[in-house]
Image (cartoon, rainbow, N blue to C red; front, side, top):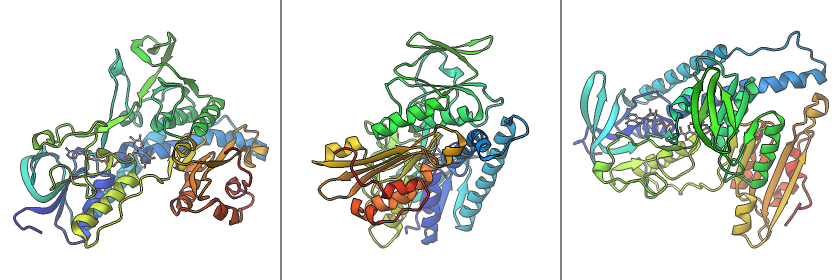
Length: 458
Ligand code: FAD
């Protein structure tokens, strides 16, 4: 690459996508630097997937303690939960992961700048840190600065926390309220409910998880209600005031709730503040994302972007896959196949979990002339003795003409684990006949995926 620049690639943001791009480009012989001003590993490691999943594990124990009695286990006392233990153990684990990320970068020969980076021109970035300012040049600059929580403006919104703060609350909220209807809101409602908070979820539309399969949404609503989450749909927060006994939250439907913590989880925006893209003429599109071409180049060809900054699924595996594509395009010898963003398996780690891949029933009805829907819901065997009323939903959506399974949806225990494997089958374009030819694993809940013979509806 060009020796006139300090580096061949300079990555801004050491999150999911940035770290992978830096490491893989360096492994291909590129001279690489990366700038990070907050935490190595980015959102996922520090305030996203990782702490969220650890807290989700913690929240499941309450059900497990209840379930155990029917199997003959008796716990000596009522189990108690200690928030500081969970919070501090989580922080220790994240510190360990931060160290791993640092070593991965060092071992790959990537130069790390602990600095805030701002674009100066198409090849130059200014680095600002406690140590001072410097300028660094690179043939290519990769923007990998991720997203940032967006908080709507209402009186008292400053009394709420976002997902950036909720993991580190000083005291455990006995009464917890989350505003939002996306997967992050739903997950936190389940987490705090499971940990023992009186939990409320407020969402302005009639049902949460817009974009997910409608039947999955309704089933999840019913299961979460059974577990004790108070769901308030078709309403919004009008204002929050600090009262003697906590935060008084007034809803637009006139109801008031007094809680200890309000989490606002109303979406995230591309984290471009202070990045300097405007001066270079890089504009955001209508969805607030940075437009890129198939080589992940912005309107300035030497400046690339990935992950939560661009219009693709806001998920760590998507950011990582994009990083690999970028390195292949710009530092490799072949042109990679474009990514398939349609059949992306994903999970919502609420209780019970949701696992989903491919088209919803509603989307499939629009796309294909005729579809077949195979669905079943049942009480998992575990709950015959546990006494729990939790049910499980399995659903396959099939294009009638080709017999291809175009969508699979699961709600139930470990659906997040199950959907990865179903995702391979759906990604491979397997037919319902292929599913039918596969013998079930008995006795499991997932054997239903290969034993649903009659369509529930067409
Ligand atoms: P990020 O990982 O956000 O990294 C961006 C980095 O850039 C940050 O470290 C930031 O400090 C740094 N940065 C920003 N500006 C500058 C600057 N000017 N100079 C230097 N550094 C800068 N995804 C999943 O796949 N599964 C999940 O279960 C999941 N759960 C989530 C739960 C929560 C609560 C949240 C918030 C997100 C979750 N996500 C999950 C989404 C996932 O975290 C993101 O999609 C992913 O981290 C995006 O990666 P990225 O590389 O685009 O950016």
